Image (tube, rainbow, N blue to C red; front, side, top):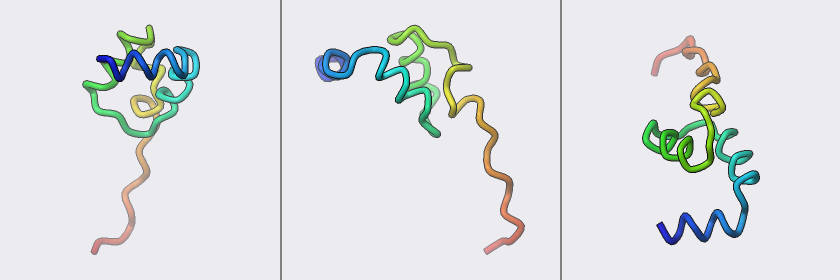
Length: 60
């Protein structure tokens, strides 16, 4: 928790919100934690709302 507090002090909540909501992949646990810590909704996260890339037409 001390590491988390240091990151919040250094960057501030607004900068963290901008960064984490733009990430393409986060675990559901991390999304839940960030929602609570930064007062966000799941829908705010790119990783929860972006469409995945379409399936490649070839198989290896």
